[in-house]
Amino acid sequence: MFALVRKGCDYITTTARMPTVYCGLGLLPVTFAVLSSVSIITTYLLAVTNNHVNPLFPTISETGEQEPERNFFSLLLSLSSFIGFIIIVVRYKQFNFVSEYNELEQRILTRVNKAALILGMITCAGGAIVATFQADRGTSLRGHLTGASCTFGGGITYMWLNTYLTMKMIACGINSKGLFAFRFIVSFLSLVAFSVCVATRYVSIDQWNDDKHRTGTKEFWHPEDGGYTMHLISSFSEWITALTLLLYFLSFRKEFDQVSFEFRIKRTNYLALPFEISSEGRNTPLLA
Picture: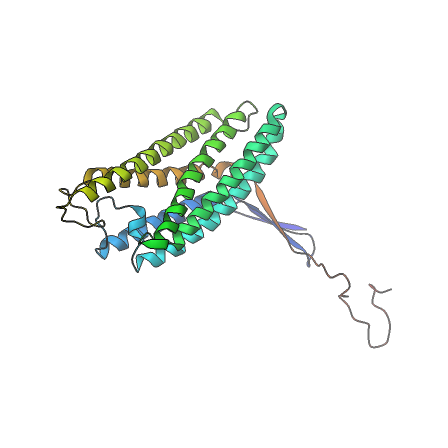
């Protein structure tokens, strides 16, 4: 047996034919946050460079409507959703293990953890839908709005459920009060930002439609257009909501550092013999 350690990963081989890899998962939340940030920032820069959106707080969806930024937006957001799905499952399994330290409330904590798992999957599925359906018109727009509702609505609820789970594990010494405070503040900011985003979005659309003398477009609102101020507030709130989601997922890093993933390779076909009978007709040691 031998072991190699590399940035939290232990590579252990018990035999030459059955290697096993143990890898810490602390990089998963970091990868998710970085990849999601790159996705949003890249599409924004491309959209502004190609003069497809107004540089002053366009909505995230508007930055990924047209090519070439649409291609990057779809690819990177799909990858982020996949990594997010893995994080949701790992978090579920990780908390199931540590919840054993709170025997008095283990049953309710297990139920809450299962609810968080379902909502987390809905959140990641929503991200994949947003990546697939652009916010242009018709069926694509309805699909995009459905995905965005699942991503933000499901994500915020997921955050609050995990904040509750974090609070319950303070007395057991699993989580600190500082971590609970951070997650509570981030969850609260996300809820407020999303509420403001939705409310002002509807107001801005109504004011836009009522303004018969508007000179801009929905991609390039002018300050004199109806609903301009509400549009800026809504877009800014949407960016804050996305940022809080990334920060929350990033807070799993320290807990995931204590989780290892085992990848084992072994034979399943035991009928296949690793040695052949020799030319002299004698059995090998395995057949003897």
